[in-house]
Image 1 (cartoon, rainbow, N blue to C red):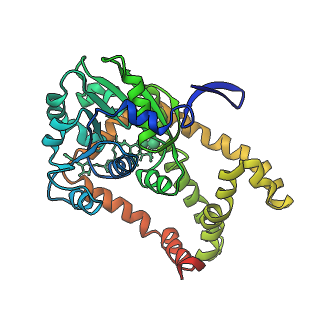
Image 2: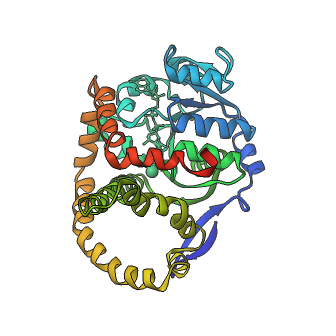
Image 3: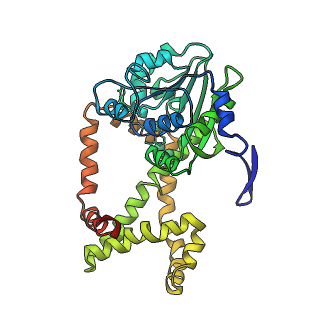
Length: 348
Ligand SMILES: NC(=O)C1=CN([C@@H]2O[C@H](COP(=O)(O)OP(=O)(O)OC[C@H]3O[C@@H](n4cnc5c(N)ncnc54)[C@H](O)[C@@H]3O)[C@@H](O)[C@H]2O)C=CC1
Ligand SMILES: CC(=O)[C@](C)(O)C(=O)O
Ligand SMILES: [Mg+2]
Ligand SMILES: [Mg+2]
């Protein structure tokens, strides 16, 4: 592992230089990797591994949208695409990539197929950490590990195709064969990770649930909505409010942050903007920090997992979810965004 300095703290990470693809292929050369579930992570990980030369099959319920997508992506029924049970029986590394709530339902079937020496692979610490609520307790004679790409499966695939890579965390929960760690890292390289940093199942799930509810998804929409509403209620037009809240951020400023950090983005803005942003970031931090503390505590207590399991296990959860997504989509702010996006030169 390469030792690197992260802001003054030394951490060991795994890079593609020290664990090249050829090594990953060698480690997994005798394995049949069964990707169970073809939703968001399933396609990204399975296609990247296939392109990287691994022996991959896909398991998915027949007849639905996901099955058709798998066929369209070149998985061949009876050869590389199977019903869930068949794929579970054939696979020696079971990549459990159903939604976290759906994993509860299929678990007895998965468990029955986990014979000694197989691997159970996750992309989230959820099922194992919240075992009291999920019932997911792996048998003692299998390896259990995770690789959690830090981003959407859609990005994982897109970046791979562009020759780039998303970072992933990895963790070993159970090492029955003595080779779990090596296999885990090989899987991480195989799915197209940029570099890999180590964690454990508990820290993976608590940080992930916090991040997606916080700055990555929940908090960002909340802050967008608050600023947009203030601008609108003070007489600004939707296009002005949207551009000043979202479009400039995603199109101009965040790419600069991604490239070279926040100070560099600031340095490329006016001294007027810099003065204001330097004065205002701390009040925003102070105002939101209590909400983040509340969020983290709710994650830590298991409350967030409980909500997620309960809500996503209801038979009409997709309908309800679609209603809530429609509420976002049909809000004035995001409808304004649709028009703004259509006006980008590359879209017209
Ligand atoms: N969505 C993402 O990009 C990310 C997901 N993860 C993790 O990866 C894992 C997979 O997540 P997603 O790809 O989002 O899953 P998903 O929500 O897209 O579902 C995957 C598949 O599960 C199947 N499915 C749903 N209910 C089922 C049931 N009762 N029985 C059998 N199959 C069923 C669906 O057909 C779908 O193809 C989860 O642990 C998630 O937390 C981790 C990082 C990012
Ligand atoms: C994309 C990702 O890593 C998330 C936000 O944690 C998720 O989809 O669960
Ligand atoms: Mg995540
Ligand atoms: Mg997540």
